[in-house]
Image 1 (tube, rainbow, N blue to C red):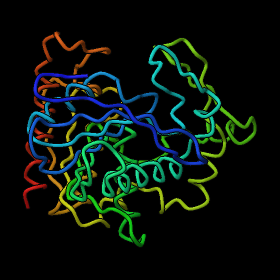
Image 2 (image 1 turned 30 degrees about the horizontal axis):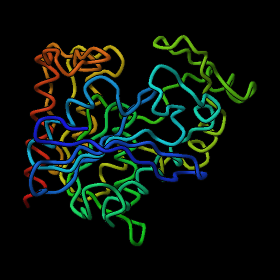
Image 3 (image 1 turned 90 degrees about the vertical axis):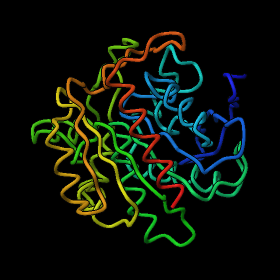
Length: 290
């Protein structure tokens, strides 16, 4: 498929527990400055909202862009439904970290469209931002792991488990808590494995600790009207990241930066979404040039 001067190719990889990672690559018309990896958030997927628009914009600016579904997101290329709710229930931070490391390594080694791209910037929206932070911190301690040249979080939380003690107790006793999808109407479940993993080693899944441990620059973007993740989370992340982290708050922006889902290719891009895309692409180009 062609989009102006860029082309799009689909691919799959074996991810955590040998489950499938579904991906799309946007290829620039000429030589590549490096790669951008786009990580979706909770109940998100690679085709959600502004992700395709961000990928097109980054490809037009000379980057190879990989957007993908985490293996336990429950999503495939059938975007109308969570085709694998059983996998959604089994998802954990650890599984997402493994998936991002797998995609990053495949990108570095030339196993994905666009050839070998060792220089990468990782972008994560909401929960995907936390996954990117945790993975970047883990990469410092993992022999042979890809270390990003830069990292962008958009509307990311600063904690890994926003559950009350009552909700935690129900999850422990019942084995799951329901989390309905307003998009598909499905009664999705969060499984106990997610909470068990966090409680077994809280420091390993702390985004504030993570942003303090990796070495690359970080751009922390948030909307001041985010009703899902308070803007205070952005300031906390930037403070923990010290001089390597810069925070940008977009006025009037909500959790999805005012982007509808889906955002059709011929639709006007909302101003807050456009601002996020420009900030992310400019930051990525700068990191890849250094």
